[in-house]
Amino acid sequence: MSSFLHQRSSLQNPFSNPFPASTPSSSNSKKSLSIMGPTTLLALISLIVILGVFCPWVGFPQGFPFTPTPTSKWAHYTLEQALSFVAKNGSSVIVCIVSQPYLPFLNNWLISISMQKRQDMVLVIAEDYASLDRVNLLWPGHAVLIPPVLDAEAAHKFGSQGFFNFTARRPSHLLKILELGYSVMYNDVDMVWLADPFPYLQGNHDVYFTDDMTAIKPLNHSHDLPPPGKKGRPYICSCMIFLRPTNGAKLILRKWIEELQIQPWSKTVKSNDQPAFNWALMKNAKEVDLYLLPQAAFPTGGLYFKNKAWVKETKGMHVIIHNNYIVGFEKKIKRFRDYGLWLVDDHAHESPLGGL
Figure 1 (cartoon, rainbow, N blue to C red):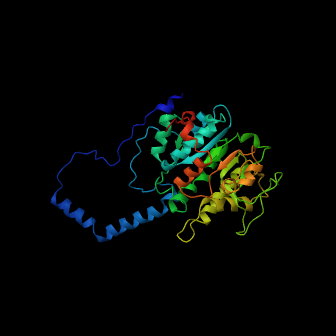
Figure 2 (cartoon, helix red, strand yellow):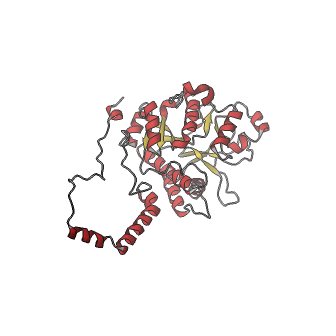
Figure 3 (cartoon, rainbow, N blue to C red):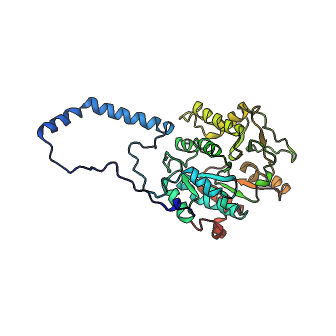
C-alpha cells in the first residue's frame, strides 16, 4: 500500500502559548480591562453569531472558531489520493457518505456489495473524524474526509437542519469526483444489493437515476425523465445515482447546488436535497442525456416493502432495495430483519469492516 496511507502529520496546537509566562504590569492590566469593554464584547458576540450562521456555506467547520485541531493521522488524506487508491483497477467508484450514527448501516450495505465482488471499488466519504478513523483502521485507505466537518449527531434526524446540512453537501462531493475524471455510483447506506447493478448501466448516458414513486410501471417503461407531479417537478430519488464525468453530468450537479442555495432549510420549510435534485433534472433535461433505471430492478421502499403482490410478480428482477418510506434507525433495522436483509447478523465476516 502506498506510503501516504500510513503517514502521521505533526500538528501544532494553535492555542498553546510559545512564550514564557510573565506577570503583567499594572498599566497593561488596566489597558486590557479597558479594551474588553461592553462595546468590544458585543462586537465579539455578533461576530460569533454571524460565523455560526454562514460557516456551512463559506467553507468553515461548524462550530468555528472552537473546532479543535484534528489529531487523526488520516486528516490530510485527500480525495485525489483516495480515488487513486480505490479506483486503481478502473475508472469507476462506488461512493457513500456517512456520519458515525450510520456505521451499522454502512456495514450492512458493504456486506451486500461484497457478495457481488464489488467492495474494492467502494470509497466511504466520512463526515466526522470518528468515522474516518474507524473505517480506515479496519479497511485502510477506503475512507476520506472532505472538510468542513459537520456535527455528526445533528445529521441523523430526518427533516432537521443538521440532516439538510449533511445531505446538501452530496452534489459538491460528487462534482469533485467527476472533475477528477472518475465515474461514480452514489448509494445511501440504507440500501442492500441483491445483484450487481453495473450491467444495468446501459449506453453512455450522463446521469442514471431511479423513480421514488410507488405507482407500478410496466416492465418496458420509458427510460426518460418522468413528467412532473403535483408539486411541479418529478419525484426522482437522490439516493441512488450513477454519473459519468461528462459536461452534462457536471451541469446537473452544479444546478443541484444552485437549487439548494435557492431553497435552503428553514423551520417552516424543512427541506432536504431531493427536491433540488429534481428541479435540476427537470430544468436541464433538454441539455443532458438522462436515463431512468428499470423500476423492477431498483424499486423504492414504498413499493418493495408494501406491495407483496408486485414483489411476487417481479421476483428475481430486484437489484438494489432502498429502505426508505420509513423513518428511524430502529424501524429501518427491524424492517430489514423482517425481510431477511439485515445481513450483519449472519454475514459480518463477509464485510471488509468485519463486525465493526
